[in-house]
Length: 391
Image 1: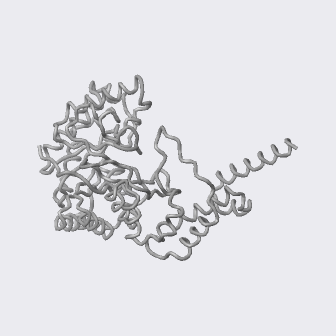
Image 2 (image 1 turned 60 degrees about the horizontal axis):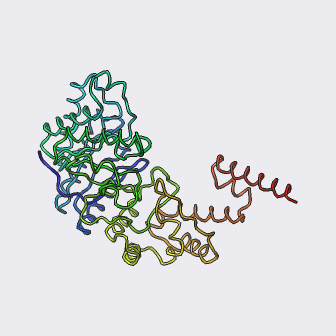
Image 3 (image 1 turned 90 degrees about the horizontal axis):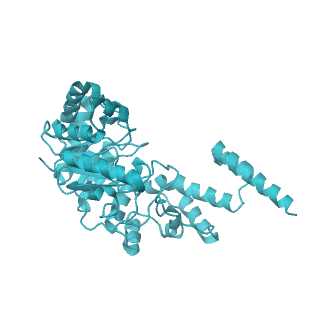
C-alpha cells in the first residue's frame, strides 16, 4: 500500500474559520522555511468536505486547489486532503455510498492531492445500525478505509471515530478495556503502513500523548500513529487564545498541529512548535513575528489550555504593570497579528476589571453576554447578602 511521507506540519481542521487560498500559500511557505513536510486540508467549514460530502467541489474550487497543490510541490510540501463522510454515511446503501466516496476522493487526487484522509471524527456512535449489519463499527470503518485505499492512486490515511480515548467515555476500568478492544479490532483491519491520526488519551492532551502507556491506542497494534495536536486550537473555546511554549517532547515523532484559522497566529504557532518547550526560543519566536515585549508581562494568561484531569493554574490578579501592558498592546501595537489578538487582549482586560471589582455593573452588562452578566450579577447579590448577614 502507498504510504505518505513522514508527517510534521499543519492541519486546517477546525470549526468556525476557513483560510483563503492566499493564506494557505503563506502557510506552505512557513512549513518549508521551518523544514516541515505536510499540510492537511480538512476545514469543517468547507461544506463539501463534511456537511455535504456527497456534493462535488465545483470547477473554481478544483482549479484553486490544483494551484495550491502545485505550489506546495515547488516547496516540497505534501498536501493531504480530508473527506468526512461519517456524518451520515448510509451503511444500508453501502455500495452506492462507496461509489460516491471514491468519485469524491478522486476529485482531490485529480487536482493534485498527495494523499487522502478518510475522516470519521465528531460523529455519534451508532451501535444499532452496526448491530443490524452484523458487523462492528471498527470493522465497517476499517473495511471502508482499505477499500478506498485500493481505489485511489495516492496514500490513504484514517481519522477514526474514537480519535481520543475520552471519546469512548471514562478512560479507566471497564470503559478503558472497551476502547482498547475497539482499537485492536480496528487495527486488525488496517495494513501496518496506513497512517492513523489520533490525539491520545484526551482531545487536548498533555505531554507525549502517543508515548507508550499514555493512551490505550499505543498498545493496539497500529503500524503508524500520527499525533493530531489540538494544543493551540481554540474552536471549542473561541474567547481564549493559547500561544505558550510548545509543551511536547516530540523528537522525530509524526505530528500535525491543528491551528486556529487566524493566519498570522498560525504562522507564529508553527514557529512556536518548532521552538519546542524552551522559554528563550519561544520568546525569540514571538519577537520574530513582531510581538512586543509588553506581551510577556501578560503571557501567563495566554499560555496553555486546561488539560483534562489536571487542575488549572491559579494566577494572581493582574497588577498595575500588567494592566499597563494590556493598554500598550491594545492601543500602541498595530500589526495584522495585533488585530487578530485584539479581542483576546480586550477580553483579558474586561476579566481583570471584573475580578478586581473595578468594572461598574452597567459596563459589565454592556460587555458580557446576558447569561454571564446575569450569573455575575446574581453572585454579586449573594455576596452582598452574605456580607449583610455577617454584620
